[in-house]
Amino acid sequence: MPQENIFVTQCCIVGGGPAGMMAGYLLARAGIDTIVIEKWPDFFRDFRGDTIHPSTLELMYELGLLDEFLKLPHNKTTQLSAKIGNDEIVIADFSKLKMHCPFIAFMPQWDFLNFIAEKAKKIPCFHLFMETEAIDLIHSNEDITGVIARKNNQQITIQSKLVIGADGRHAMTREKSHLTLESLSAPMDVLWFHLSRYSTDPKESFGRLDHGRMVVMIERGDYWQCGYLIRKGGYDNIVKNGIETFRNDFAELMPSMHDRVHEITSWDKIKLLTVCVDRLKKWYLPGLLCIGDAAHAMSPIGGVGINLAIQDAVAAANILIPTLRTDTLTVEDLKRVQDRREFPVKVIQRFQVFIQNHVIDKVLDNKTPTKVPFTFKLLRWIPYLRRLTAYLIGVGIRPEKIK
Image (cartoon, rainbow, N blue to C red):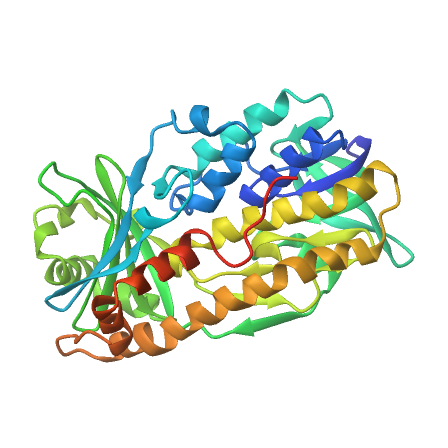
């Protein structure tokens, strides 16, 4: 029988991603005893979202961490553009945002998480348990009062006033709480892989759409992180056609990459991201609050999932810290977090679903040369709209401030 360890804390956060680490740091910074549990031994996970949006950089400024944070290796993007057929369209122009950092910083997510973790570890009431997998919630009548976890074949009991589920779209906290999930459509999945980047290549990230195919190219210094969109459920057929066919299809869409597609030596080099867009109808139960992807899985369109997750963490901290300090937390306080964050999530998800249905779905069905959709023509005709899309992507609806 494995030895059982019991820990008692004010807040247990399940998941050490952007939402979990930011929430843990903010709570501990305010004097709330906090345990964050992460099932992996480190934060290194390839093909995770690597976009640090202007709103997140603004939060780093408010925390007094921006200058130090920007010393970490990163690339700046002031515009997002796409080549549609033979036309190049600027989709978003961040340079006009009135913020301390009017750009998107592309930075490996593990660097961001390690940075937050190192700052949090200096706070005595912050505790990070790595290689610790949450396996169940502790129920006491109608309340959630903690988490059962496993570390090195030992069972751990963490008793807490509040459990925050920040464990992603396949969350244990979702499953064990039986909260109702509302799913929205997503017509595509994404294949992620790396290709070398040459000094003569474009300097910023971009997208390419043509002949029923779409790719996003994210500039990562000496390599490209490539996201190749496919019809949902079509991965098995692509594999069946062989790796050589896939390489040829990609090179046909991206002729400038034909001299390096040989780097895709096998399917082991490719990561399938199954795209889903969903949200919980209710994000909470007595003693439990879900945030980030655990509450609302986002489409990769715009790379806004990390931004929304961090905004959730800030809102949760702002609302819950006073009640956790005075031990007066109620289910109404948890409802206030959802009330604060649900509207921004719904707006962004509707925007993503609109793009999926009116652009991506049509492109994936059309094998002829792709014409610029009317929606994108507006961005060319009305430059102000590029600032609007930049605000929607880079800042979002109802951005949070550190209190």
